[in-house]
Amino acid sequence: MVFDGAILMMPCLGNVWEDVQDLWRPEFFVLFVIFLCWGPLIKRRLLKIAMRITGGLLSACFVAVLGVGVWLSSFSEVKYLTVSAPDGLHQAVLKYEPGLMGRDFTEVTINRAGRCRKFRAYSYTGPNRLTGTKMEWIDKSRLRIVQEDNHPAHGHDCETHVADVTVICTYD
Image (cartoon, rainbow, N blue to C red; front, side):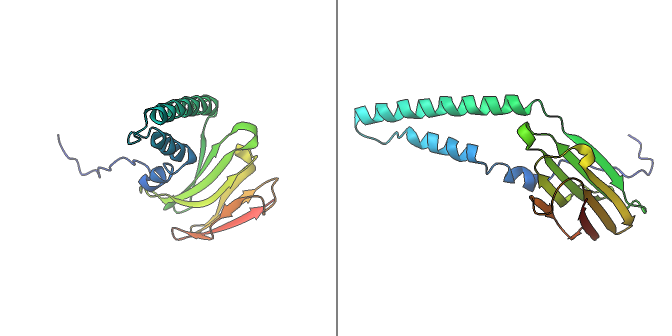
């Protein structure tokens, strides 16, 4: 292999901390409770059988609900829109994920060009569309995020300063 002076970059593997935070969901808590229902240390035979039957029924319900959830979420397609700063040092990435019955998820993250670490600047969970959130760079260090058709009090989370960038959220 001949090195021609180009910079070799490692691929971005995503934000590990966000992936770990996704593990603390109610489904995993229910799974933990289900395993507690098996109660292998119970001495009475009848109680042990009842606990195993209850645990098995709860496990079956959990698997059924999880399967339906995975099936319903398979219909949504995540869409991305990227806008670069005028000097090219920062990128703003809009992630739109349509949900069931108006539970859409919109998120804007900012990262430095060529870096993997992303910083959340804006997030909204509620009815929306891909063109409902607009991003524009005012200059190299200021980003304006305009959310259409929504009131500021409806679950918008906007950070004012992220990764050396000032974020201005407005509602149209």
